[in-house]
Amino acid sequence: MRVLLSVIHIIVAIVITAIVLLQQRKQGGFAGIFGGGTQADSGQWQRFSQLTKITIILAAVFMLTSFFLVLMS
Image (cartoon, rainbow, N blue to C red; front, side, top):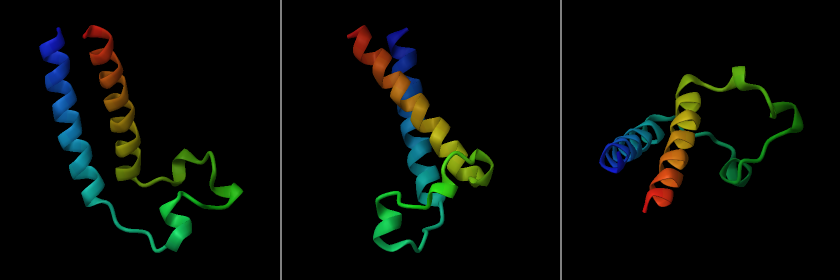
């Protein structure tokens, strides 16, 4: 089980790296670097691009696999 989870973890890490590199850069200056935005932008899942949604999901899977790998060790 631990080997399977480790393989999934490595695959997710590689895919999330590729997805992040594929995304277009935003021209937000320092506000864009630190995740700044207006209050109207928060909570609107539909406004995210498809790559952003995939990145969020993969990041959650990466964190979960990390958590379970730590618990198994």
